[in-house]
Length: 320
Image (cartoon, rainbow, N blue to C red; front, side):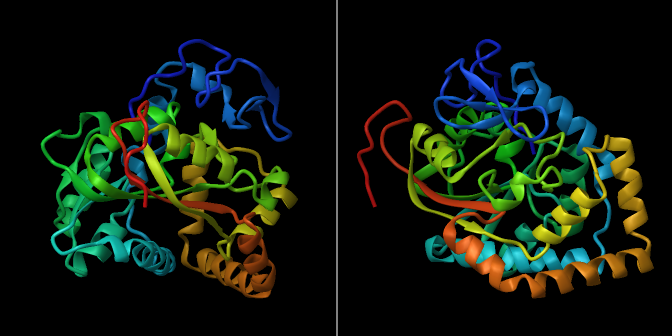
């Protein structure tokens, strides 16, 4: 879910460190900062490009009932996320999820007694989740969140890559959190092995920023957070989807073609065949996936960090 944050001050600047020296990235029309190594789409220099992308890709048509397959995969992901944040959920803790998709994680946490709220730019998503799951939803960007409510835990899974100014979003988020509040971030890992192939599933037209373990740590610390842990996860479907897209020569599809492909996959027999092959490939690649994640080259990058110190530009006064 993109957020309304300013683009870099002028074209050519890295959206993380501000340096104006960039080099072409081997895949697609992306750039890599020569100073901090952040990989990004040159559209970050166009004002409101992330919001335009959000309207195109995550508007009303994005809301659709998930299939049983998708619900199963979502539940597995929700269990992983919840296990990571559970030690930090004190009694009465307030949890905010930024970018809620189907709202399944909020529903999962609510069933476990957590006081949850969702935040999403899509009015259609907010209406769907609020009506279906009966969870408070805020249809706004992070910088428009009420200042009088502070959160103990924030979950932001696969949001930061959509944003043209990630450090600004994190700074806005920090001001809405309690002292020592926890943030769980998940984002694609451009340092993963699959990223060397053009069919990597995270080379998407709605992704503005591509983080590595090094650059995500830099963004988090720049915004006034203390990093607790940075690690990677290798989903069972990542190699299957990357190989399929690479072999088929699949390029980034436009929104209309992507919606058409999604409708085709929703046909029961097509989806069953597709998902069975995906699961089978995931089982066969299990040893490789475990090694890949352990070495830090997994497809998904996960960060646990805490709000600390007086502010992004001040000294960190509280360490864990």
